[in-house]
Length: 156
Image 1 (cartoon, helix red, strand yellow):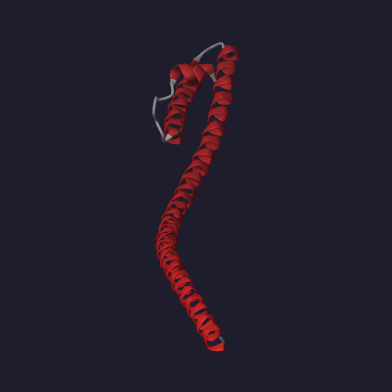
Image 2 (cartoon, helix red, strand yellow):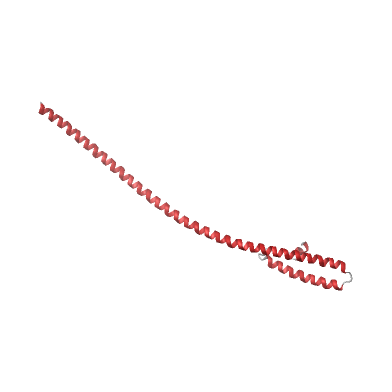
């Protein structure tokens, strides 16, 4: 794994990590073929066989890592797709809610202004009615006093 990392350092900012892993696999197979050719001609097969075994084990690990990274990439792409859809829907729902609440606020403000105007008119009408009532009571008291005076004069 360290040898593979040294031979094939990961590319910075590469979002297609699976493609880079496949390139590493192809280079590893080429290296294995070269080592196999050398081992066939070498007189001492034991150390070369160990190197070939190590390289084959590395190849298996790299292939497994590539599959795992491809699965993770698929999950990430799916997450991004669904997350974007969910966020877009949430934003549109939020905008609709804002419009609805703005219209409710405007209606409530208009209702409040109308209620305040009606209250002011009712206060004016009440004040006028109380003044008229006071004038009528004063007139009746005056008439009652005049009647009492006239009626006392007639009796006398």
